[in-house]
Each structure stands twice: as C-alpha cells, then as structure tokens.
Amino acid sequence: MKKLYIYGLIVLGFAACKPNIEPDTPQRGDADFSNYLAVGNSTSAGYTDGSLYVTGQQNSFPNILAKQFRSVGGGEFRQPLVRGEHGWPVAKKVLGVVQGKCDSLPSVKPTDFKGALDTPGTYLNISSQGPFNNQGVPGIKAVHYGIKGYAMLNPFAGRMFTNPATTSALDQIIYANYSFFTLWVGSNDVLSYASSGGDQGTDSISLSTHFGIAYDSIMNTITRNGSKGVVLTIPSITDIPFFRAISPKGLAGVKAEDANKLNLAYNGTQVHFEEGDNYFVIQDAAHPNGFRQITQDELVCLTLPIDSVKCAGWGTIKPIPGRYVLTRSEIDKVNAALVAFNGHIQRLAAKYQIPVLVTDDFFLGTRDNGGYSSNGINFTLKYVSGGIFSLDGIHLTGKGNALLANFIIDRINAHYGSSIPHADPNSYEGIRMP
Image (cartoon, rainbow, N blue to C red):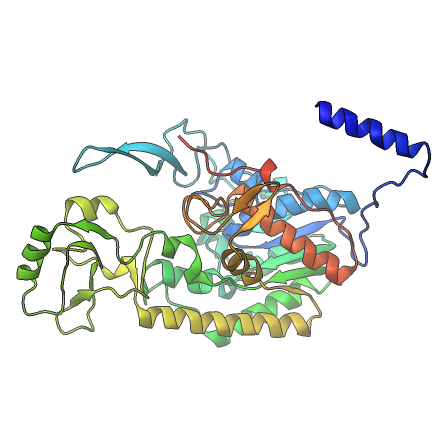
C-alpha cells in the first residue's frame, strides 16, 4: 500500500506541471454491442467439470464477453441459469482425496461432488424467462440446427427452447433480437466420435457435405438482420487434455518379475513388457490376435477407469476396450474431418463477410509458446495444473474462458476498429484444490 501511495504522490507532482492525460475511453468501432447473442454448444453454455452449474455458466466466455461489452454500450445478457451448484444432469467433478480400491492409499483426483443436491426441477422449461442471449446448447452439432423438435431429444435444449416439440435451433436464433453475435459450433460433429473412442454408431462423424449445408443455414440465419459478429473455428480436438492426460505408456514402474510373467502369458504374440514403464495393451479387432500394445502416437481417453487398470489388470492381462482409445486410423479420421469442417467455416465466413477467430491460435499457440501469462500467472494446456481446462479435460475453467474471451476481443477490435478492454482471468474461477 505504501508503494501505491508514494506512486500516487509522484503522479500528482507531475500533474501540477503537465496536462492531465486520461486513459482512452473504450470505443465500439464499427459494431453495435447493445444486444449480444452467443450461439454455440457446451463451451458457450458454460458447461464445466463435466456438468452444468451456476458458477460455470456465470464464468462462460459469452458472459465474460458481455461484461467487457458494457464498456462500449453492451446491454443485459440473459442466460438460462440452472438451479444450484451441484451440477445437472449429473454431479460436477471436483478434486478430492479418494481412497484407492486396491491398495487403499489416498490420492487426489477428480471425484463426484458430494454437496447439496440443489438442482431438482432444473429440467423444467424456462423459455418464459427469455429471450436468452446465451443460446449455447450442450451436445448440439451443426447438423442438428435445422431439426424441428430437437429439444425433445436434448434436455438442455428442452429447458430453454420455445415450443420444444416444434422449434429448431435455427428458429431460436430467429426469435432473438440481437445486434452482435459469436458463433462457435461444429466441435461436437467430430468430438462425439473421438471422445467415445471412435464409435461408428450414434457418435459417428458428421458428413462433410451435411456439415457444410448446415453451417451455411446457420450463417444465413444469424446474419439475416444485418448483425455483425465473429465465428470461431473448431480447435485441434486431439490436443486437449481429455486425450493427453493419460500417457499411452501409462503402465508405470512394472517390476522385472511381473514383466516376465506377462511375457509368458503373451508368448507367441507381439506384446512385450520390460522392467519400468510400458505401453498399455488394447483391444484391436483389426489385429490378428484381437489385441496389441498401443503406440506412442495413439491416444487414451480420460474416461479410462484407472481403478480398473490398478485392480482388474486393464492394459496388462486384460486389453483396454476400444471405447477408451483412439487408434492412429481413428485420429486420422478426426483430423481429416477437422480440416474439412474448418474449411467450410472459413469459406462461409468469407461469404457472409464475418471475421474468423482461428481457435488453434489460442489453444496450440498457448502450448507451443510455453503457456500464456496473465498478471504473473502462467497458463498451459496441462491437465489440472495448466489452469485452462476444467476437470473433464474438454471444457474450460472460468480462467480459461477469460483467456479465450480476450483472444476473441482482440479479433473483434482488429476487425471492427473497437477498443474493448480485456478481462482479468485471475478474477474468475479455476480448479479448486481439496
């Protein structure tokens, strides 16, 4: 406090001799932020730690943007807030001290929130409280936007859509009265496949042609009233902590005697164990044995039950099921889809003359540059310790959302000639330690 006081005296001393220079007043530039609409999926909605809860919604990047927009004429930003902090429809994840099932040794890891169940009735439709400025719908794909009655299939849409049995997500955009928008959809068109370990069933990757048609319809709808905005590309899915937190060489500290026993059990196959760290054994129907060891460039999903690895021999005597692993061929499918989908986004944004934020400039730029520093705190893409991603390894913390919001603000300022100030990431929620 003394340093601040002394600095203030110095400034006052100079003010007596020189004209008082005030900081520049934020300017809105060539855009109208009076009524901001956010269209997107779970990340826009504020889904965090594997669930939807009030603090997560309040720390969503659209809500953070709306706060910054107020300095340039931004107005009220309504969100379809859920009831309470427990999480809906499932409990949110928190860090807790958990006893091991095999060795009974305590460890700190994500666990279900055990606090008050304060979310009963959250499923009820609250569209009468709208219109909502945040139209982020967890689980929605770009190819879902034209489906009439989609809210009957998705409970998150069901609680906020007008006339759930007949309304489409495109209709919800038309109902809204807005002057500026952000659009970030498309991740789920490939993420659902990737996060389920390459499930070709209900979680298959959207067809590129269908994605392009759907995204064109969204762009046509969201720009029809002349509003301006910014669209976001789909980030590199396989670089998020959900696929990086667990190493494919995750069998740590295998003893020599155990390695020998495993090699005897797998005699005649290509599976081989050594003393020290080893690669998991995984199911692979395409392999002659139906199983093999994972390679260093393949990925393990964060949903892998570690207790099954420790207690039931998953990854050693029992191959890990394919739903927990992304093989090289599956990764190639994901990356090919990302290239195609982002190509559609770039092309259609140019068609409708809307600026694009390439999200990998934020995510991979943060990784490649050793992190992002804010007020002395360094943020990285590392799981838990990095501070950007929440405990589900997919969605952002409040701090991560604020960092992303600042990148969006930079893109808006550069394109529209505005001077919207940055948010302070350290004033928002991160991961709480037990």
